[in-house]
Length: 199
Image (cartoon, rainbow, N blue to C red):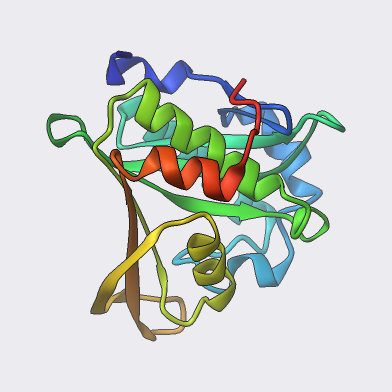
């Protein structure tokens, strides 16, 4: 089983995507995809300017280095280009629990299976290498696309936490939690992902 202390340098891959930690040199490539307003509609933070993007990348790097989150760039293997980002967060090694979230892909990559492949890489690693007993996800109750996506990968909806946090503009959002447990994963993987190369 892999030590969680080494997560910052982890590279994950399958036949469709490669996930590796965000680097300062990624700013230029992110700048070509990160300014689509619909990407950030349900995010607590917004990226709408070069200053926002630099803050996003710098926070991702800082969080990864201090171990509070491990933020990955999602690279489409077909093109070698960055198409979005995702992260491990709320790392609870003692309880073998981790959250997958902070996920987005650019408009051109939506509906192509790239986000699904990234989730598979993260889930495979969480259960097989990190020994997780529980992988959790949360999203805004209003984010119907994300909710459909989480149901589609076999995550179980657990419930709503009301008035969870502030959103830009002052709205208090309700969040809905989902999870996949270790003993569920083999069946979920087979039924929802089929015979996909784990890389």
